[in-house]
Length: 186
Ligand SMILES: C[S@@+](CC[C@H](N)C(=O)[O-])C[C@H]1O[C@@H](n2cnc3c(N)ncnc32)[C@H](O)[C@@H]1O
Image (cartoon, rainbow, N blue to C red; front, side, top):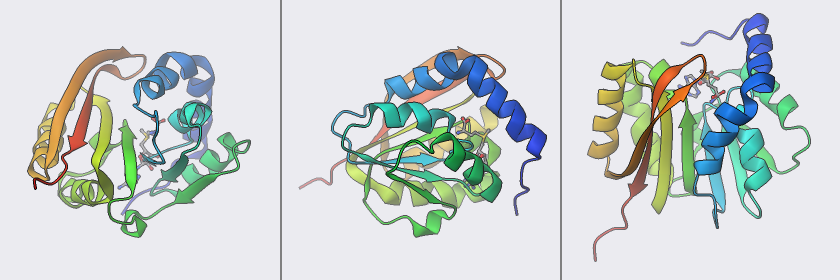
């Protein structure tokens, strides 16, 4: 079960995008290792705040924006209206196996209940190519969720490659981590 956002929340997020676009969303997108990436997934894309900057950097790759909310997806289509080659989906069950080079989750995983994370994280790992990278940024104050997220990523075979703490306006100190799906051993 999920609830759709109020239109006022979408309006306030659009204001935050205008005010903090470069400082929050562009800076996160700029750190994504997009060079050579063919397929990229924005999981929990919201109104396309990070996707907007990712698309400016993606040269020959394709972006898929996934959100459980139709209302956020509609707002995302509007934000990304100048970019022709974007897919929008609302169901992670539609993700194919081993198809993304990069999956990123920007302030999404902490919003998902622990019981659903137990299913969502294996689904994301399944959709990631071997050698592919998963990046998340979530508020540090959500310590219990972070413990669960890190446990599930590691139990599902991802290896931690990098971590940093950034101070994000409105969200406070946040943990940003980069994980890689290892190539199978010979
Ligand atoms: C705080 S917003 C972040 C949106 C965007 N990533 C950003 O940083 O602006 C969280 C988003 O995750 C989406 N979301 C929550 N649970 C989800 C799920 N199980 N699957 C996909 N999207 C989900 C919400 O609908 C919402 O758009």
